[in-house]
Structure formats: C-alpha cells, structure tokens
Length: 471
Image 1 (tube, rainbow, N blue to C red):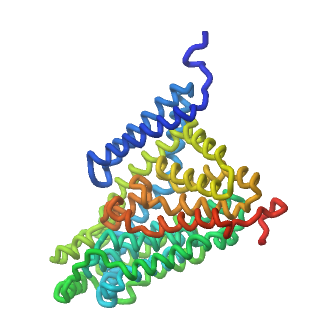
Image 2: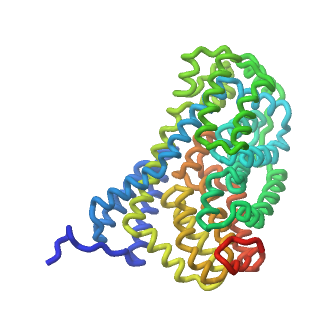
Image 3: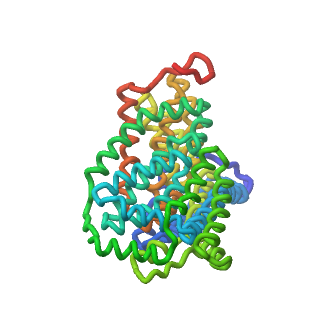
C-alpha cells in the first residue's frame, strides 16, 4: 500500500482549482470587510497561504516542495523590498531637502483648481516616461501633487486617480520600465516593436483620460485664497524654497534617462538628497538619519501642511513590505500546488478566435495579479502559457506582449495587496478602494485591447520566420 508520504502528486481538477481560488477570494474579501486600512489584508493573506499549502498537501505534493514554493514566491519580491526601502528614505529626505516643499509651493501658486487634474495627469505621464517607474513617480511628484490638490480643495481620490493614471502610462510605455522590458522579453519581441504595438491601445486611452480629467472636478470645495496664502507662508517659513531645490529631482530624472539601473539611481538620489538637506536646509546629520529612517516630522504650525509633509522614511514602508511578501508567498504556494497552471490551461484550451485569445490573456493576467499581487508574474507566466496559442493562430507576438501589459502592468494599482496598490495608498494617503473608480486609464486600455482584437485592427500576422520582423 502506498503511504501518504510517498504518494505521487497530481494536478488539481478544474473543480478543485476553482474551489480553492474561491476560498482564497472569500477569505480576502471577508478580511477586508472586517478591517480597514493597509493592514486589513495581512491576516487574510496569511490564512490564504495556509489554505493553498494544505491543498497542495492534499494533492500529494511533499511538504518540503510546498514550503520551497512559498519561500520562492516570497523571495521574488526581494528587489521590490529594497526599492521600497530606498523610496521611503528618498521621500523623507526630499521633504527635508526642500524638494517636495518647493514643488508644493510652485504648484499652489501656479495651478488653478480647474486645471489641477489634467496637469497632475500630464506631469505624472512625463515623469514616469522619463524615469520608467510608477513607484518613483507616485512617491515624488505624486506626493507633491497630492499636496497641491489638498491645498486647492480638489477631491483627493480623483486627484490620486489622475496621478496613478499618468504614472502607469509611463510605467507601461517607457523603454526604461522593467515591466516593458519583461513583457517584450517574454514574447521575444523587439522592445520598440512592443512599445509601438502598445500605442494602439494606450495612446487613445490616455487621450480620453486627459479629456475626462479636464472635464471632471468631482466634489470640489475650492480653498479660499486666505487658506492658500497661509499654506504658502507655512512652507516658506520652514524651508528654503526656490528652483535650485528641484535639482535633486532633475538629477534623478537625468540618471534614469541615462538608463542607469533603478537601484543605483535611487541610491545616488538618496545620497544627493541627504547632502542637499544638510547644505541648503541646515539639517543636522542626526536629522537626516531620522528623516531617512522614520520620515520627516513637519512642525510648521499649520495642520494641513504638517499632515502633507510628515511622511516618508524606511520604517513607513514596513506595512507595504509585509503585504507584498505575503502576496508573494501566496503566489508561490499557488504555483507549487499547480493551481494557477491548471486555471491557465483551462483558459488556453477554450481559445478559438483572436478575440477570445486576447480576452483569455487579459483574464489570465488579472487572475495572476489578483492572487499574487506581482506584476512580473502577471506578465511572465501568462506570456509563457499563451505563446504556443499565438503561434498556433499565426498571430504576431507583439499582440501578445501588448495584451500582457494591457492588464498585467496597469491592473496593479487596483489590487490593494499588490506593491503598487499598497505604495499608492501609503504615499498618496487615499485607500485603494476609494481611488479605484478614478484610475480611468486602467479601465480604458483593456477596453481598447478587446475592441481591437475583435475588429482585427492592430492584430498582425506572425512573421514567416522566428525573428521579430517589422511588417
């Protein structure tokens, strides 16, 4: 008789995979309803890891293999953890160095409430295209723009939606973005061929976003000029403000444009900001260390400014890091138990047309980002699974890579336990479920993706050789 310990593992049936995912979804939804804030998903995610691990054991997988899968999944976020720690330090130091206060001062003086939303969208687009990172955009100009929107009385979730829509446009389209390069590599498509393909879905969505943000103001109660002047006085009374203090920001953009690796860009930016705070703002070395570790503590005497400028620090990223480690562990458990593979195989088997193929890829990416919170996995695993189907249907891989990013990249801020969703909540001060209805780019791009697939526009035949050739 075969013992349980030596029993061969088997893949889950479609019913079993569906029931396990339904259980995970139920636990997460119930957990979010029982609590609030960024930490609401901590325990539900931990319980979900246990549910999936137990399912893996039931399916015959050795406990050591399930544990290795969990550790592998958690380990995949190691680079993201380091990035988040550097971002936290940079935000605290940029406030101490006068970078963000200067941006806030200029924004309050120059931007009228009627133009805040389209301006926030365009500034975020430009910054993320130049840097290739939504995280950096959210944590730097995003923080400043949220401060301006608060000072002008603009609806905060709507402002966050404009910032995130712009930030993820660049994260999707920039040749410097890691997700752009991952998607192109996964489909074996030339990087700029991949970007050109994405223009078909992303550019019209961005144009519509710009129009919508220009027309929309939401429930705005414009701050009177006296309040705005009070905020300006509080900022100028605490920090030295001027164009020179934007040099650290411009320096970071220049390094990113030079295609310096993101970790090195952030590290150099942290050192420059720390030096700037000491030299130009009169900060002590102890103050710099505190700002980088615990965040800046603003004491201007005005509550609104203090709430905006008291943030940052590596310690502020602890909830975000816990969240993405748990999400990574859940993804690893799902992968080790074969559950995600079974779900994706079911999607591939049902494909009959180009439109159905694109819809299936989108569904796979949404499934991955929802259950793992990891953009990289949401691009790589569906990409590998669907490449043979695109080859079988003789459709160019540039359509595959475009579709991967149409969901896998820009759906991230819509998931509270993804690194993007958690960071956005932490930096912008707006819960994911509150800003979610206003991140219009994330909803418009998939609509264009499906429309093009069913109309045949932008759906090119595969080249006659294995090389990625221009049509």
